[in-house]
Length: 339
Length: 196
Figure (cartoon, rainbow over the protein chains, first blue to last red):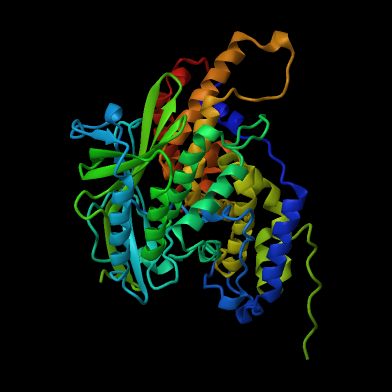
């Protein structure tokens, strides 16, 4: 058996549940029934030609918000967030003076929330795009890798990212022009209603996320009976959910509420003297479960949220830290010119 | 006076491209594309994200495809590379979920169909260890590498199709796959020792 055959064996032979299939088909037909016929459809188009679909905004159909916050994941994780290594036992050079304490997280997060609120004013309105370059990194790799850029339409109700495909090289600094922006669609269709229904108060938000986490199945394992998240992992899972929300690039007022919610999670610890994978100093706030240790990193001076990391114990006693490093952030107009 | 509308093409013999073109005027025609490919796309997504998330992402894949159908290249009869490409881009919104899932797979015994005791040979046990190691390695790949590797391993798309899905050249698919396999072997000691 070679590695490709082994990977083929990992794919569960899952059948599309008939009720879910029917629901998806119904949703599609609902969208179809409200779509405006394309007037260019009737004359035969040359094969291979391309033009944008015309669809009225109010014809959009959203995915059902199943189980409260379930769909949040649909909006998450493509965002550009600087990420760091924070565990003393796995830290990189420069993190040797890290100290871990269990106090101070609430105060630090309050400062971070204040910063997030101030940052809201800095987000330009109008047809501008926030673009970041993200570098994937992991302690399991020989070298870091750059991946795609992410883009946000800052003038929209919620800032949500989508990858811009086609950029793979590490640019390290914002280019003067990004022509690929012209084809980038900024907002995942499923995302806005989820964020629109989020509680706007930290306590309510946290309660909703705890309800969701306690109800959701743990990591799916093919062939194993479903089970819920273990009690020892609930706080870490809640923290992870909020980190996903933070990664999704929602507007700064929402970020502030999410940071305040994190402050109420029991067991959050503070690691001072942490450094990011690109050497940026930070203060890590972490919540550990039985397997994962999730962290966010705050700038030690401005308390700006600069990233997150996920350190995982793997068989053999190793700890692998996975990171996404934000190399830069800049704003571009619709024509792909930096503003 | 016109000659009248042509009879609607037979759904069973119509290519995906023809259905998509028809759906520009008759939107409901797109449901046939769903009927043809939803189960396959769901299986791929369930493998990558787990069945719960796959429900939503499958629905979103076809909604996105429907909304972008006017951009479809009608020279391509088979819509599956296009659909896989959309699904893969939506998976990028779930990178964290997928990583957690890969790690969970690495920690758990690999479930498979029951087999007689005598078939549980050393070779099979070696294979199971290899699968677990690879599951963990999958979680540490970059998103772009994981996309390519799993489209190769979990679908019957050709390299050309995968290149179309990911927006890269066919030759790039082959060269990147070679690099990814080397990376996996490097990160999964068990796999490098396994018999092939």
